[in-house]
Length: 493
Image (cartoon, rainbow, N blue to C red; front, side, top):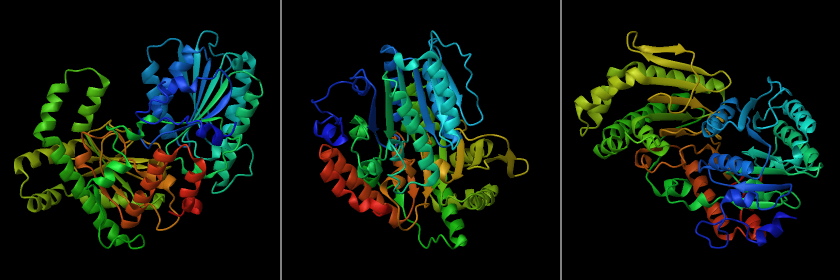
């Protein structure tokens, strides 16, 4: 069955629609057969939650195994595995294993009475990992009881049945996708119960590829129009975007001015967040509540993160980090500048905030050579320490990076970001929207969020929203939709 026919049968979910009343997870298991399903959500709108609920639903349907193809980076694999472990920590019927290119799949696992969840890193050696996993599956004929494969951040590549549809696919991504696809085809050929769920927040590449015989069904997550979600549409209507003057990618002297301005924005917004009387009262009301949602709000109102994403090159990350260290090492000067500039700031409260910052500030470069620095009040400088970045683990965190912080990574307490890494041309909607890590459920903190970017990126975000709106309105007309976003072809917006 082609996706074109399925879309015309209106299997897209729409918020508030009476046409389909089942939960997404019920719809995934609507047919007790092997199939490929494309699941489209929005950036940081809760797709991991859908994955977790799908695992729970698979247990109810007797499925024996879940394979999560988590990400291309270790930090995202850890993030996904941690979320899954939290949900099933008290369930003895579920065992969770993390597998990367250095791990070995042991066939001596306690297999008979448990549902196994494997979290995989999508690396170039994934064929070895999948081969070992396939041997385990074949040994126990797991396809007879049921396997669900969840390909997170799938893009267009995971639907490939061969190497012919390789537009815009780099060789490594294409190679990984073909290995994943071959793994699915081998399991599908067993005529058992194998569901392949591709999950993406950026559907444009998927839509403009030839869908014929690629997916059996497509589901649009209903949280696109969730009033609590703060995504592209919300932030375009807010005053969060700031365009610095005279910034140039080729002039490193302008980077320092932009980063210093970003630090100023972050410190000012964080101070206002922490000292807002309404926020303080809300924290007081919630602090005795043990519900995860209450604790999440408290964390958002008491912690703050600043992201710098100017370029994908590690050398640039090092340069940006040094600018931040140089600027913040002289806290007295920074404090005086802000007190002089903002006359409405209470001096004693701000000085107390700065002392809190000195005690709890960490700087991270998130790339292949990850490094961390902590401010030392005695030496009045930043000292390197051995500590990986984890969102929300420390009160004040500055994160500097490129590719590793541009996709999938949840930055829970983001208040300020310098986002200038998109080039002046050939930036498609998919890539740009994934970089927008300030999207999410941020109603409590949205008014404090400031994004320092350029006019080119703002224009592309506006064009991206036009495409998203068209998907919401005309999701059942794949031909019109493909034509409407055709100008994205080749990375042009």
